[in-house]
Length: 120
Image 1: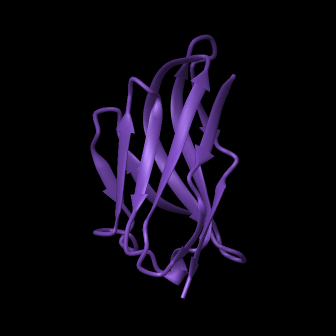
Image 2: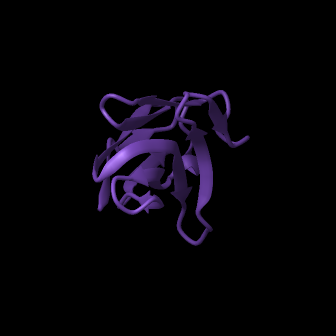
């Protein structure tokens, strides 16, 4: 079994910054691509950013230039640095990982989510 635990959410004023973290633990042989998704009330979950094992990032157009995804493979942790936050960034943010597990091959996992609220 693999666990993803997010942290770092909270309430921030527009224009402010937050840094989300997602730590992976459990039966992990290798963490492949890791992603951050978000889901605002009444909306579908959307991909915000992704980063490959080698560190190549991709971003949705809505966050490009404001958010930065990074990872520390030794710590099995992925980060999302969010700058210039806008009220429309308010959502629950979820970590997702493609994992080569020790015993069960390739699987995907989700974290429990962390709430980000941006006030205007």
